[in-house]
Structures are given as C-alpha cells and as structure tokens.
Length: 264
Image (cartoon, rainbow, N blue to C red):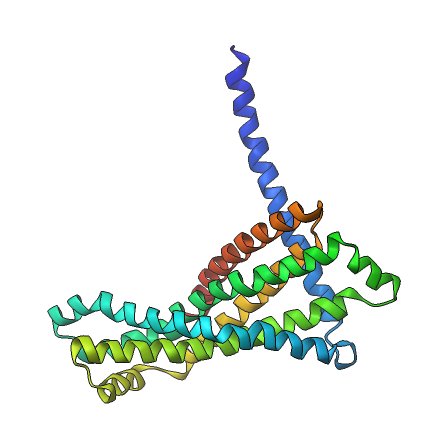
C-alpha cells in the first residue's frame, strides 16, 4: 500500500511529459506542413480548378450562416449593454463601442470559430476519408503531389475566404447593432455612424483583417494536418475531426491572445 502513493506521484510528471510531447509532435507536424505548402506556392503548381471549387464551397456557401450569426450577435451586444448605457446616459458612444468591439475582437473570433466548425471539420473529414481509403496513396502512384493538388488550394481558399467572410460578418454585425440601438435606445443611425467614424482609426480595421487571416491559417493548417494524419478507418476519421476542431479552436484563442498583445 505504501508504494501506491509513490507510484501515483511518479505518474503525474509522466502524464505531464506525455502531454507536452503530444503537443510538440502536433506543433512540429503543423510546421512541416506549413513548410511544404510554402514550397508549392507558385502559380505553376496551384490547381486553379480546385482553388475556385474550394472558394465556392468553403466561402460562398458559408455566407448565410455567417450573416445570420453576425446579425444576431450585433443585436445581442447592444441588448446586453442597453441598461448600462441608459443608466450613464452614454448613448452617443454606442456606435463606437459596438463597431470597435466587432471589428477588432468579436467579429474575427466568432467568425473564426464558426468557420472552423463548418469548413475546418468538413475539410478534415474529406482528407481523412481519402487517407483511410488509400486515395492519397493512389495520387502518389499516379505521380500527383497530394500537397500541391489537395492541400494548397484548400489552404489558400480557407485563408482568403476567412478574411472576406470576416469583412462581410463585421458589416452585418454592425448593421444588426445599429438597428437594435435604434429600436431599444432611440439612437439615430446617423448618430451611430458618426460616433463610430469619429473615434475609429484605420489601424482598427487592419487589426481585424490581420487576426482573421491568422485564424484562417490556423484552421487551414490544423484541418489539413489532422486529415492527412488520419488512420484507423471510419472511427479514425471521427477522432481526427474531433481533434482537429478542438485543436483549431484552442489555436484560435491562443493566436487571438498573442495578436492582441502584439498589435495592441
């Protein structure tokens, strides 16, 4: 019995070490994949048909869910702030507060998480299914580079559409906030926009775009990495999708913290 506590005490550092090794392994895999993608970012190696196909299914088809979510989020933001705004008589700051929060933080973060759940998970499932059914090995047998043919177009599509969807989502969220502020607080739309444009700076817009691009890179690399590393048949695909979504979401929050710290 006396050895049981000692054995448990020894097991704790072992588990912590195993966790760090697992994280390092996945981070190394992401770095290797990023290097492989960068080596193939030449016009001659990019499959334009695959690129435009992915732009459509990953970006264009995501617009409805992004717009619906953004509109309600903008409205909810004003609803939550309305009691305090009325209490301190700060209705003239509603436009700036809603726009600033949406552009710099809430918009990129929320849209990134939605994009990860819809597009990232689907991408992992597709690549994982191709991996366990030996379709990727078949491409190599036909002298087709799977990174150039499958991964590069998907990554380019995800990064570019993430930025574009962030712009669209921000505009819709601000519109929802404006309409809600007009309905609940009586803030005239002209006053709303005047408040926003008077205090916002161009750098605020750039911060949001940079964040959305970084989140797109994180989602693209994570979903492709876990998809290509899938093993174990159909159950393995499910595990890969779950791990990919969780890892990308965690990466988004970490990237958000670091980018906020660096960009201000």
